Length: 564
Image (cartoon, rainbow, N blue to C red):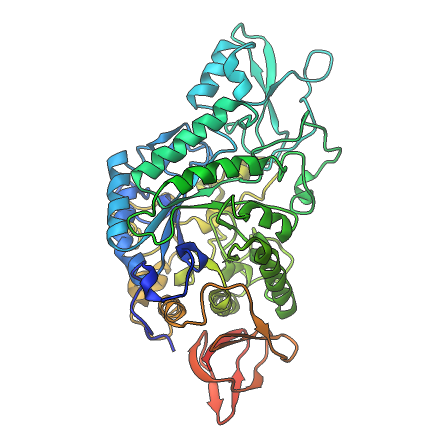
């Protein structure tokens, strides 16, 4: 069931004539977390040279593009999402020539490259912020961030009641050059990540320049971190509530999803549209929003025709393994994107959430950061089925490194090994993101299972080698071969990929049957075998299925693709 059904992607629009209006419409995009993908110099930390060496693997997997998490100069207070210099590579990852080599090699292999951009905040070691502190009150550079006097008799209280996503107040008090307590500055995340003031023209000018710098280098697009956070409500009003994290995703907040962000992205779109398609592109450069919004309808605002090209579908990622819930979020996602003409995106895992092989191994309702391993066999079975459902849906799909190996989250990391900054704070995010960031295994044996010659920056579990690329390559029924076959079939079948509609057919409770042109996908989310009428010719299945005459026994937690 997992043999290759087509040659790996060449990254060109000729693979499926008439299938696309832009390469991103149906792209399968692979997220690389550079520090955990491959180590090229043996220091225990992944780097750009390591990524470049492994690009042929991604070509053979069949993906269209690679998204790289941040590799910029950074003190690494939040794994590179605290940027000190947006035009320099952090030495732990390499150099600008290494970035150039990666881009050239990727394009030669037919892969596009999307880089992370972090515009909501900088590092507190950014030159602007360092000078703002050193120059003290009255410094013009303070206007490029959110500095405010405190409340209380001596300014000892934060300017408002906003809470950091990582826990605690969203404000930190400064010390003036003369040693006295000074103003406070806003940081929606760690104190080492002060928020930019996007009302200041210098901030907008700087990021337009940064866009051009990387576009001139040859990148094919940008994934925009915290795209919903740039603009804050006028006057920075109190929210009037504690436990504010519980409100995220349920309402528009004074610091998230403000309407003013859209003016920023319209200006960015004009810049990207000035650039011709990259060396391997058939439809130009793209912007991808990481935008946590209360509804998919508000997410659609980020991908109107003059703004971004894609936005992450976090509502889908957060949905339990339940047929009714999945159908509901699929329908609402497609309906929201249809009026703006943007592709719907689908994602199951990333560097901030527990891997879906572990989420689905646990009972529903535990959120997206889970501390228990759950039922490993059930989790992998559901993860494989969920992947085939995701890849059957119209639009673009994101794959997080290692999910194609069926990797579980590492839930038993010792506290002394953890590096997630929110783990060390009293409140906020659970702080267990390290579990999905453990370096992936390439070989059966070795000190780091082929990750590099110098160990790995987070400890890998015993037995990791059995899940390695080496162990799974060519192995019938392996998760890696399932992904390879599914991505190839998705590219080869004219009814899959781009589009905006699915047709639902009647099905027993807990089962989904969706139809696309010349294609049917059947999904059993229940814990028992279900008998269905055979809808066509078996194409691919997430688990072995028994077809007898005109019926098929669909095992528990299984997805099957059919051609009709």
